[in-house]
Image (cartoon, rainbow, N blue to C red; front, side, top):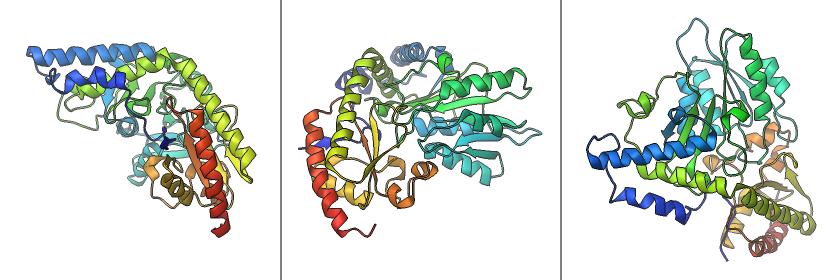
Length: 388
């Protein structure tokens, strides 16, 4: 049996999404910047997609910038808001951000372009808004907090933080912008930018059964930043490059499908995840679920297996046809303990024995039974030979 439980890394392309995309690979292949009819057919498809997504986010169509994915969108925010000023910009980020944010901030600090404050989290993986409030300085330009953590599924208090920042901005001459990486939230949580009180929001299509290579950045009207890809006037001069028409159409279709079945899909996946966790806890000793058990997205479960090394678990499960991960796919191959789990105060040994199970709409109870049956034997064998 083949079982895929790594949906946080990427999801399979939905057949309805593929159907919507297919015409723009061949029949309607025009460049959306061309003024002839074939090009304008593609332009209309991009415009329709922009309107569909804007409705989902409750924003203006012109506030959306199409990119190649979440990583580019995060980089566009962080690098684009660095401007020459009499003050060096100060950014605030959490210690549990995706590496697309953390590594970029680290790079900007090394380049002496910004100052940065990294706020911690509690043992459940939640950011305390009061810690962010204490970290704000006169030079603070940007606060970036992930919406749903990609390793633990913990939901951060984005709306509370956003409202707090808005109050600060009422009495602050230098405006603070609030960004959230919502890549893992799409399809499960509210993406209404006004409800969340965010200025900037990142999404990626391939996490919601859309195509790889398609993402977007929502940027509230009036925000200006330096483009990071230049050479054309696409996206109102904010991101150059020929539009990925098929990818953009696919992302809009994926978001539309997600919106239409969000509640029932989330409910079904949550029940399946809870069943997985209960079965593992019941049938395998010395395991621990990492993260806030109440404030979690329904599709992610991060579990530590004492005395068994995480990479060995992954490889052993793979031999049984089961795909899981130890955390972000962007850090695959790294032997370092998870920065997310370490920030939560989990010791390095427990961190290195942790597995992320991320469920999707096609998983079944029969698959979960198969996974746990194989996992029991694997953990027993690895504990017998492990030095952890």
